[in-house]
Image 1: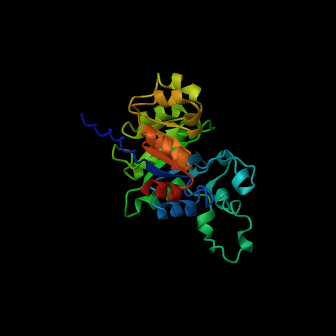
Image 2: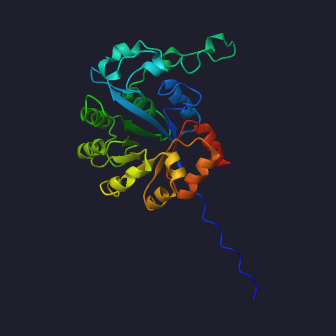
Image 3: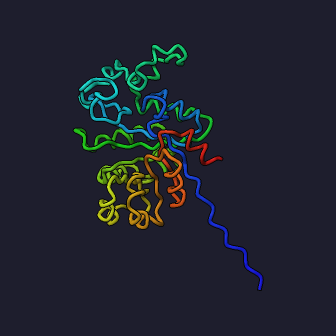
Length: 269
């Protein structure tokens, strides 16, 4: 009897490449410059964190205070947009750039605090579809007002419906519940930073919710990988070939990375 050919392995899934805070490996995070670089590098989606200022504007900032990126100890929630606009949030990334004759010339507006509205306007003006993954940060003094303002802003763009290029992410289950009450058709992503949180979360998150675990938890906890089978999974922060391969083997639908050009090069050969 002749030997039968071995069954071929299933084709690896090609996940969406999501730029984590923009092309943040090379350019200061959450700046317009970082997002324009990510778009130029072919990112298929952009990830950002949002916080609410004292005068009610959503800005793209990760930390509670501006100490790390601008040297100011002030909390974002206590500052008005005009105060934030005076800060340089890019120089920390390349502090010696002014001494480098070959460094590209800085565009001042590309290194300022970015409003979410400006980011969405940038995306809306593109000639190709680029999605936006927006993480609301909690806890915050403004509580549910963050999600309320976010949905209002998305509604201004007509992006509060099922075909929206935007999705809302949070580690806070309550925040995502609020989002769904305000915009039932929007996709939401339940972020997971500890594998041992999932047994509790799996009892309450909707079957149509996306799950967003960190890559370290997937690497170190095979049980979590098994429990996520059959769900749509988006993973953060994927910066190496080995981690990307793990995500592909799992069938992960989106990888959030500081290095969108590098990850695209791995995926596209």
